[in-house]
Structures are given as structure tokens and as C-alpha cells.
Image (cartoon, rainbow, N blue to C red; front, side):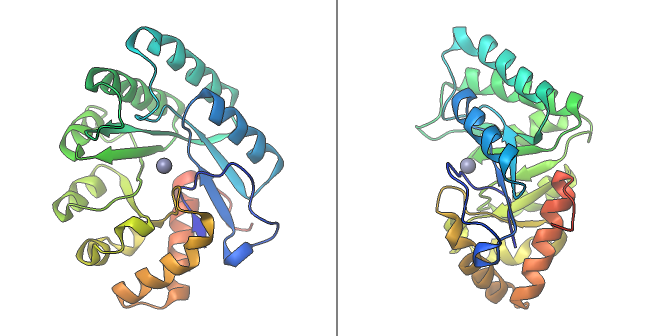
Length: 232
Ligand SMILES: [Zn+2]
């Protein structure tokens, strides 16, 4: 099993705890990304991303500086994706214009670096797809914690993105059944990495497939998306 999106501050116990063989740790801001990079540098099961999360954006006048710092993290290498980034209409996110600027800049960085994106999309699917669409199909990545609406599955797949399910989406059974197996990812986000086996089991039940098959397929999907080896 592979956890495509887990906010880890410390590495999980050694080996394959609970049958989980790898984690992508998303970027949040400069401080947390530095910690993540340090962890991933000493633990081959952890893969770091770098990004500016829409909840933790700086004020308008400091955005340029934060983006320059992010570009430096990208240029330094050692990351497998850019994000999490995106647009969020909830009240925890920053002003809409700052979100847009940060999002556009990160899409450009991903396009230049040839890295996949980790998207955070809350009540903003249309707006995010519009921004992604400016890149003429050059981008790829995942929409993390996807919970629907179901009509957005096809447009996201057409844009080159996989859809990642967290324990929060477990009530959305029709959404879970409608994502093609090759575009499905599993994640625990900030719910605790120990949740992954239960999530995998629940999804397998909802989709009517063997747990082992779902575990294998989602592991393959994550490793293909992030360009990771298949032997670890
Ligand atoms: Zn997250």
C-alpha cells in the first residue's frame, strides 16, 4: 500500500508498518517543507513535495519572496511534486487574489520543472480546471482529498489528474465507485497514517474488489504518478 498524501512530522516505524510501503509528504510552507526534506533525505520510504498551501499563504506583499523561496526548494531537487496548491473557498484560506497568484505561479513551476502537482481544491473545481487548462495538457498530478462532485471526475481525468480518496470521503460511495481504477489513489492526509489499511479495506468493499487488488493498483498508480521505483 502507498499513502499518496500524508502530513507526517516524524517518520512511521521502520519497515512496512500496517503494510504501508511509502508516503508522499505534501509541501505546506518554507518551514514545514524544510523538515519534510530532512525526513525524506534520511528515510527512503518518504517522498517530499514542496509547495505553498492555500491555508498558509503570506500577505500579498510577501508572496513574491515566498515564491522565490519555493522556487529555490524546487531547484535544489529531492522533491517528487509541487504542492499542495490550489483554490479554496472555505474560511481557512487566504484572500482569493493571493490564492490565484500563488496557484498560477506553482502551476508554472510544475510545468517548467516537469513535476506533477498536488492540488487542494475546495468548492473551486471549475476555477482550478480553468487555470490548469491554460497549460494545454502539459500538467499532471493528483487532486487530493477528492470528495466529488461526481460530475468533476471526467474533467479532472481529461486534464491528466488522478483522484485521491481520504477517510473523509467514505460516505461518498457513488463518487468512490465512479473513479476508474487506474486513476485512484489512497491518502490519509492529516488523519494519521495508521488509517490507510482500513481505508483500503473500506474502498475495496464499496468498489466490490479484492483488498489486495486495490492495494496493488493504488500503489502502482502513486508510483507511476510520482516517478518512483517499484521495487521498494
Ligand atoms: Zn493535505
